[in-house]
Structures are given as C-alpha cells and as structure tokens.
Length: 377
Ligand SMILES: Cc1cc2nc3c(=O)[nH]c(=O)nc-3n(C[C@H](O)[C@H](O)[C@H](O)COP(=O)(O)OP(=O)(O)OC[C@H]3O[C@@H](n4cnc5c(N)ncnc54)[C@H](O)[C@@H]3O)c2cc1C
Image 1 (cartoon, rainbow, N blue to C red):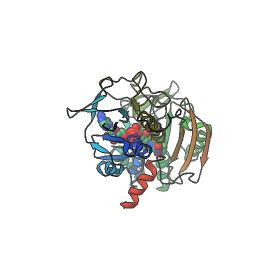
Image 2 (image 1 turned 60 degrees about the vertical axis):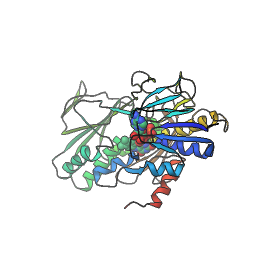
Image 3 (image 1 turned 135 degrees about the horizontal axis):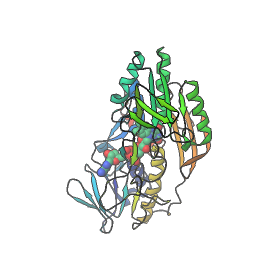
Image 4 (image 1 turned 90 degrees about the vertical axis):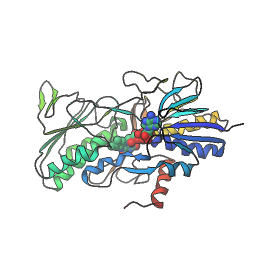
C-alpha cells in the first residue's frame, strides 16, 4: 500500500512549520511534498530593518529545508485544485495527487491607495531607504503613514514610524510624522494593554496619531483625513491590503477572496481533506506566529486523517509580537477572540527567544539550528 501523501502548497512560514510538525507527529508514515516556485523560505519580518541599513530579510534554501525534513520539494506553483479527484494542478503542466492538502500560499497584495508608496518586504530598500536618507539630509520634513483598513500585517508600519522618528532624532533632523489607522486604537489585534503602550511610544516619539481614520489619498502629497483635516506631506507610505489566492477549483469569500476555514483549519465546504493556514485564510490577523499556529493545527488534522493521533481541538490563537522601535524592542502578546486581542501582556524583556520575530514552535528552533550551522555576517 502506498504511504499517506500530504501535499503542502507554499513553503513559507506556515508551509514549513506544517511540514516540520507533520514529520514530528507522523515520522515516515506520511509522505510530505512541498510545492513552491521559489528557491527559499523567505523570513519576511526583518524587512523593516533594511531601510535603516541594518540586516534585513533572511532566506533559507528550500532544497536544504526539504532534505532536513525528509520531504520532497517540487519547484513549481499550484494554479488549481480538484478536491473531488484529490489532485492539485501545477503551473508547469503536471498534476499531483494527495490524501491531504494544505494550502499555505501566503496572501496576494493589493494597493489600498493609488498615490501612496506601498511598503513590503520585496521593495523595503527601494520604497523606504531613500525616504530615510532624505529625512537624514533634511530634504523630507513631513511623512504620512497610513495603515489600511481590511487585512494587513499589524506590526511593520508602526515599526517604520517609530524607527524613522528615532533615526531623525538621532541625526538631529526634523520630520513631522503622522500615522493614520482605520482601527479604533493602534495594534488592536494585541489588545488594550498593547494599544496603550504603542500610543505612549508614538506620543513620546512626537508622532501624531489619528485612529479610526479612513483617509483619502488625493495625490502623492495630498491626504484628506476628514472634512476638517487635510495634510500636505512630502511622502505618503502605506502597507498592502492582503487578499486571497487565484486558484481554479477553490474560491475565497468576499470581500477579499480569502479562504474560509473552520476552527481546525479545514477549508469550509470541501471534503475535510483540504486545509489552509497563514495569510491566505479569512482569519482576521495576518501574522507569522498565527500562521504557524494554524499550520500546527492543520498538521495535527492531517496526521489524524492518516490514522495518527487524536483529532486536534479548535485552534486557540495567541498573538505574540516583537515591535521594533529603533531603541529597545517591545514584546507584546494577547489571546485572540474574533480577531481582537484580550489579556494583553507587554514586556520590555523577551518572554520568548529574543531573536524571533515570528514565534513558531517548530520553525523557531529549526531556523536557529540553520543559523548556527551557517552563521550570518
Ligand atoms: C514587512 C513585514 C513585517 C512583518 N512582521 C511580522 C512580525 O514581526 N511577526 C510576525 O509574526 N509576522 C510578521 N509579518 C507577517 C508574516 O511574515 C506573515 O504573516 C507570514 O509570512 C505568513 O506566512 P504564510 O506562510 O501564510 O505566507 P508566506 O510566508 O508569505 O509564504 C507563502 C509561500 O507560498 C509560496 N507561493 C506563493 N504562491 C504560490 C503558488 N501558486 N504555489 C505554490 N507556492 C506559492 C511563496 O513562494 C511563499 O514561499 C510581517 C510581514 C511583513 C511583510
């Protein structure tokens, strides 16, 4: 009899976390295939450091990861799923059969404001490095940062705001920074305690905060905050809005096309063999640590389908974040209910491994080992 076959599409934070967890739970009883068109696992959160000439995004070769896990790696993209036949269609023209499937393709990124610079990890240097230099040299003296409404990553824009203010201060440069967010309070995913701490940090850094704002960006230098407030900054920067994948055979839910999952991370309304984890799901908070927790739940569900272990209990998300500030980072965590944080904790000292931006039970120790084996400069 051929072994139970688990196909994991997307070898980012969620995909690799799931492969590691599955290997630990099921050993050689489950054959794992990772499908990803890229060469590397991209550890995206450190991108916010790049504009400040600090070490940024890390990449870990997928071939080495697959070998270490004992998984197959297909360097290809999935472009469709046929749940009835138990197959995924690959962009290269072949098909791959599965007994269980995990979709972990990350999110698509849409620009929320036509005239604003959209910051992401692929253009961190391009978009923001020039701005930081121009602030240092006194050419830019006003900057507006807009956290879009809808799904986006919660931390990076606050980090850019605080790090920019700190850099301007340390270079004796003056820059008026305004932060606009549609949320009623900053970092609402992390709960009230975190919101308070971040409000204080922003105020101490001289950053003007408009919460509950739904601004219009009328031009590259013109932001209408509300009927009484218009801003004329020299630069406007925002984050992408995260939307769902374009996959034949699987549809996302309106308005963002994200995949609806149940409380054990199975894609809703399918046959129970298709799971999803990470930014492409309709879970409200887009965060690497949450992606990893979903991946662990999905991996336990897949192992259970293979006849190994108990059925997993419902996914109980806890969001943990390290907020870079340009000075000491802030460590914040909260339990999540309906996408909002409660029981926030805020720490000055790391309550978890301090170099981890993404807190992931399997991936954290695994990447630490990789870093120790091949230290970075
Ligand atoms: C600047 C920035 C800062 C962040 N800061 C933090 C932070 O401090 N802490 C934190 O926890 N999170 C942070 N995040 C969020 C975190 O990086 C994401 O939530 C996390 O990477 C999502 O994991 P994922 O596996 O869903 O997607 P990804 O990690 O994006 O991985 C998706 C993978 O799918 C692959 N893929 C795409 N399309 C296909 C296809 N058709 N077929 C097969 N494979 C495909 C991609 O190549 C990629 O390898 C940050 C993100 C950014 C951009």
